Length: 239
Length: 396
Ligand SMILES: Nc1ncnc2c1ncn2[C@@H]1O[C@H](COP(=O)(O)OP(=O)(O)OP(=O)(O)O)[C@@H](O)[C@H]1O
Ligand SMILES: [Mg+2]
Image (cartoon, rainbow over all chains, first blue to last red):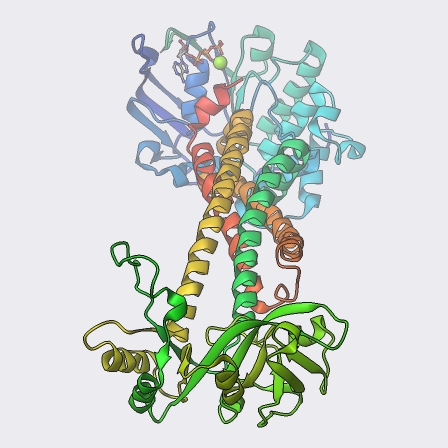
């Protein structure tokens, strides 16, 4: 495995014994005209620094809902979520957005790159959000090389490269701001098993360097890469 | 900034619909600006031809206003209404020290040299002392002699009249022959006397020839620094004590009325242009909404990886700004061309087009175009910014 940035020994983060993430009796109800849907029904768990967790469960069991709450994309109906000791229910939209930008990396099943930007621009996009100015593309290239993308693809648009390559770009984009936490919703769900294995090797390496990873998956083979599995059914943790 | 870049690229990949939306703005700006230019050109050309040497107040006999339905037929038609010498003296005393000039006016048959066609032209009779107060000559000299006359500049060109030409007045010249001593500078349409196509003779000759001892109108030249409205009131008070004998027209007030009428017409046609701008705004709104709907997923990803609401909003506002600014600027340039076309077709001249006041409607049109585009972009941009990130992510 080629060069991957060593995660700097956390100076900015709060006290080391804090869990990276703490869920306490979290309930998420989606009010629908046809009746409320309880997607999460009293979920409690903690995630410590450096963990690699997979979340498994049948379709509709609430895995994506859980991941969205972890990613501060949504707030719980009741219960508390702490990210490194900060309760996200108390934060404004601007603060939550900055938290996502600076501390969380997202990887999606459908890669979700920006079609109007080329590969290097996709990767440097979060850097520009953070610095609010033009950024040095070298940093982006460095991260792209670390996920084993060839230099000749850097100026291509996302649609011009393969699914596996797109997912590498998406991972590079998620990593470029050095997040503490990487959240992945079926990162290999749209890839063949060989390409998926390559992506999982990359994640394992990232985790080894200190990034906390939480990954939703259906696939037991993929779940084997993680150190711990949270099983969820009907919005409750079952194991 | 990256959002500016994204906005530009999004417009470019949807080139056709961007161009169509822009075209709407172009048309809106052209409609507003060219109507404004037309109005301005109209005012300028009218004020140029309504050339008045200072302010004047024109006194004419009262013609009976709403006119005599029960007044008994026929007699006392306006042709018979004159200002008597006695009334003139009253006016003269009332307006002093402003000069009161009695004017005699008729039209008659005349012939310019042997073998030429007979024509009919207006004839003004003026006291030679007064003539220099009312008109300037572009050639020749003022005549004091009863056998001399002045001709208007249009009259001179149309009938090829020169200094020294002879004009016989009346059928077969029975009213005598006059020698042209001067050609009057062009005065355009004027409220007092319009000499461009007329000839000007002495009061003496006029009175003798047409057997007159009264006047058609009295022109009062208002001195500098005197309010023509006050002169008008003075005359009305003096003359219309019991019955209304004279009608007094104040050239300045009349001009003001005319210009305000032009102003109202210009506003009206510009407002019609404004409607096309509103339509253009609606189409901007439409394609912006389309752009937002198509990119819900993309917006969701942007928000999830840490893009602030205001940044999403700015990205869409940039699109509206580009459409509005480019469209409006193109419209601004085209409205100069449209103004040129309209002026040359309607007024046969474009000399009033390249003046500063013609730039005002263009600037207004361009600004309005940009403002409308931005205003119509606000709601779609706001909607995009306030999409819930998870709803947007779930969107397929
Ligand atoms: N935004 C929403 N509005 C309404 N209902 C929702 C929403 N998001 C999720 N749900 C409902 O909540 C439940 C859990 O959904 P969730 O997407 O978390 O499931 P999942 O475990 O990710 O399923 P899958 O494996 O199919 O992705 C489902 O019943 C779903 O219909
Ligand atoms: Mg899911």
